[in-house]
Length: 365
Image (cartoon, rainbow, N blue to C red; front, side):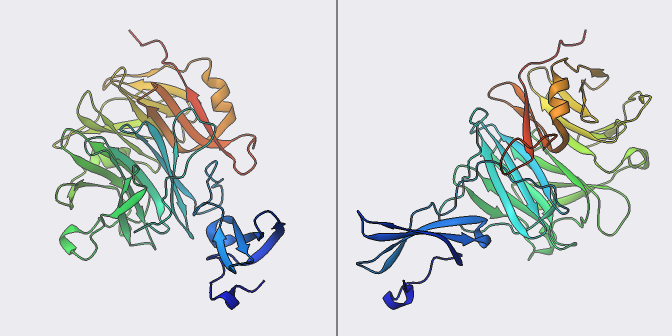
């Protein structure tokens, strides 16, 4: 079997034939090729009469579930695409392009929206953070490539395509100097992306805002008393009812930014401070939901952080021991979705699990 004799190339990206069989009814040889550069295997058919190749597997083999990203250098972030009713999982690591997978809230698998022919696509990014812009029905992913090369990309889930919003060629529109941990929220009242990040060149944190209409970044002053509370692992969430970005750090500690001024509410320090926090916004009751240390759910209304952990959440917390992408609210179904590493690997190709909380705890008085 010699593809070159017919003037046709061997299957793109494939290298080692792993399984071969003959299809007598159609007069063709069917071959599984190992294709590491494509992330798996490709099924091709060689038609003897015409001496040509035809690919039988899809242009990109369907991904059933996000890969287990437990190796060093793996980064994840998730958003809820309210316009299409899907949770979108973004992931990347040191040598793999950014991947976008979708879950419709009910199916047993994720789907891969990437079309057969793709255009611009972000390569590997470190420390990615994602946010959904409900005004324009699109997602944004921010990350850092090769240390001091911050990137901003816009994801269109309906077409499975990306738009590079970095504007690196224009110094007035360049992304901020970021080289470490970051979290991002979309301020719907002001139409801005608000990025809380650790710059490459300093040991402190900064807030930068990006205007989708102009493509301009603007750095905001962060007062010393806010920086005193700041820690690694902070999460930025937009509180729609109160029109402000809520920053939550391990402890927990909280600060709020309304686009003009900062507020430092008092949050009681627990006897055993938590080392990790995740947060999302619950529009049913106009509260920010905070997951403390992976096991305790609390709500924040601007004045009180109230423990609302339901008894049924214990099983979810035990199964998903290390949250990765975070806590996401499913607007269509009124559910909270927790994504993270599973205690037991029950799936054949992944240790990533989903926990779905289908009800709210009793609202506090």
